[in-house]
Length: 381
Image 1: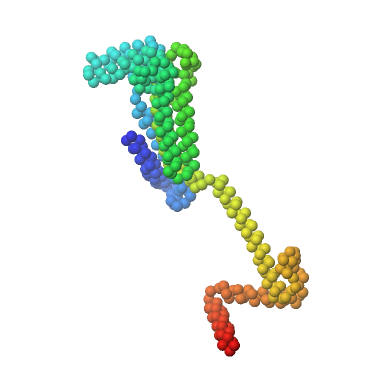
Image 2: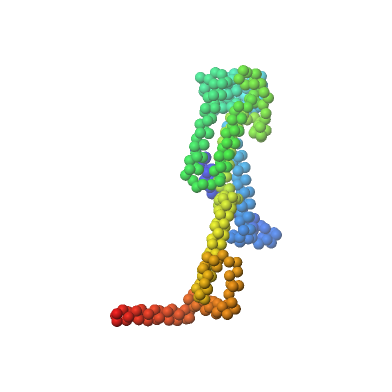
């Protein structure tokens, strides 16, 4: 538990700190050797440099975690004897005799008694092909499963024990997605979890690497070596499964840390949804602009007709393609003068300054005169 907590803290702070320091060294080196000035931290060039450096730091840290996790797994029975998992029973007996001569308590003293007893008990148990089949897949815990006697029973018990890890991990992913903010990273976490489950299931159900005789439960099929068998030839399935669990943890945390830095646009939202929203808003703005233009044209034609007392209704005028061509030349002159007055009046009303102040004062004075005249008329009545 403490190791997992330490790794979470390391993934939370170490990549950012290491990236900042590494990027500073890179910029200083490039500036002193190639005379390239470092970019400003607020520029896109600096952001690209930071992302590339961050990716390199995370890759190195992932490699370190992988090597540390692979080295922390305890040795299996075959590694203690110095043989390969597909060794025959005769090879195991020869290796055990050599181990006993070297590590017997009479030779090494009481300090080596525990290790000798552990290897001796494992050797005695693994003489049985069924126990050896279960040991390769589920580790030394199978030596305590005294109630299991057949391969079916060992496999059923081992799968039930392994399912507890996947149930707890799946529940944790669901809880983390429920309490956290919606993010596209969640889908990748679930995909990574499914890959882990499929890989572990394949390793557990694949033919054993041990040289077992044919049985009614396991077909006498040749074992296909995986990449883990190539990298760790003396390790067996249960060790590969433990390593996969740790790799899943590293990749899950790294995914949460790397994605916001390397793919910031992905974290802001779905590009497809953003395009749909922009397209919908553009269509609504287009419709609104057309409606506004039509209404403005109708209001302008109505005002012009009201000024010159032209006997044409607004609806009919708005449906004509060229209504202004029907006006006479003197009417056009009057309209021009009237439009100039409208523009001047609009500018006087809208622009701030001494002219607008005088205009407001004159309008207010005229309104008071009219109100006073109305009040005088009401008193005489």
